[in-house]
Image 1 (cartoon, rainbow, N blue to C red):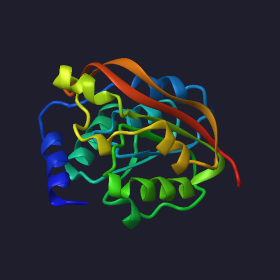
Image 2: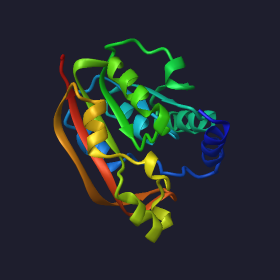
Image 3: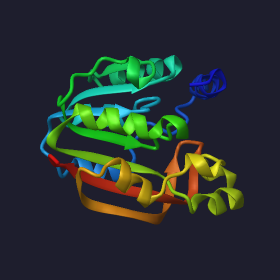
Image 4: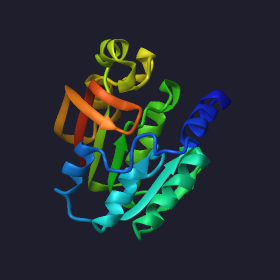
Length: 209
């Protein structure tokens, strides 16, 4: 990843406030409650709001991000809530996670750079147990009109960083699709996800090809 990408996230997470808030993403919260607690990996987890919530309801939580500033705030949030999370900093290919380790993987606004995205999805798939679940929410290709109308909703301003249902079908071809749609949502997550936006929501269960 480029230094500018890393610097952007470090600078954002160095802000005093939790920039996306401290409560979990609503879709993540709804979906994880449907699953039996086990081991879960959060990608691009930032300041830890979703990982901490999962730990609070009994999950064994691992998380990663490229931002050291994000990790510092995530661990503070975990301590405040009397839970522990295993949080690694670095690029996914350099991190050590056992294959077939996790019962679930959560990708909540994990907008990896386009040149790395499919590779990261492939690596994450390897870490998920057969029968495991992916919980995914991120901004879709239709989001730009929302962002242009209201910059406070946040999200990438480059179309290549946004998702389509077709791309997810290709990247996660070995999954039973339980939900896959682009839909309008109203977000109120900290200072950077405020207002209406267009997101892709994907719930997939891994099966063996």
